[in-house]
Image 1 (cartoon, protein in one colour):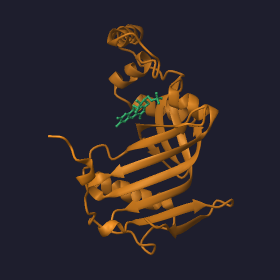
Image 2 (cartoon, protein in one colour):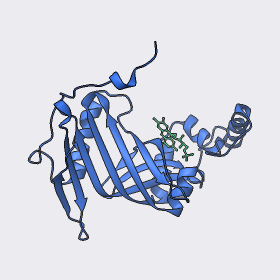
Image 3 (spheres, protein in one colour):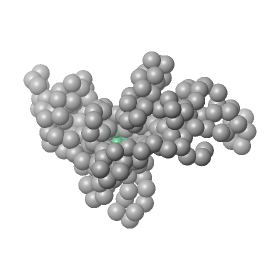
Image 4 (tube, protein in one colour):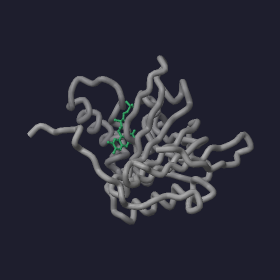
Length: 214
Ligand SMILES: Cc1cc2nc3c(=O)[nH]c(=O)nc-3n(C[C@H](O)[C@H](O)[C@H](O)COP(=O)(O)O)c2cc1C
């Protein structure tokens, strides 16, 4: 049966977000919504779309996993030679989008990016399962490869190289931190009159909260 995209629609009724209820600091609001997404047992609640800009100024987006959040910003890990990392090095700004469908919530984050410190990347790499550590050594992320056997061969090489010993973090693998200047919290509401609360940071680092029309 063909899908009728024009007829796919949902009336959002799960909740609301009023200015008076939204936290003063956007990170507190984000933590609350993330905790609620985790409590609701949503699949991959820390998955987010990461948009970057190519050298020609074209946007490019893909999913990554949020792996750290502190007072500085939002951290994810990847291959520093990947397409996204090359783009972030050339133009260090990014946009993140979270979509928690069952809660009818979207969060958008805009900010500059920086590499996280080597010690922080080391600590996260060491916390990963061994199979993921080997995968980071095996995969030349974003490069064109002939077929799957290239990855299998490289995985075998990595297994032989590191044996049963500890696996160090490859220097071409680590974290990026998105340091937000703007965050928007979107809560679906009935009749398409959704709530949008946006926080914008001023030059002194203070956050101002306002409502946008849906
Ligand atoms: C749910 C999900 C989570 C992902 N998380 C990551 C991640 O944390 N880091 C990563 O490098 N790639 C992750 N990926 C793969 C990326 O979407 C992407 O394919 C890869 O990073 C290469 O992107 P690039 O060529 O634009 O650099 C994830 C994919 C999905 C579907």
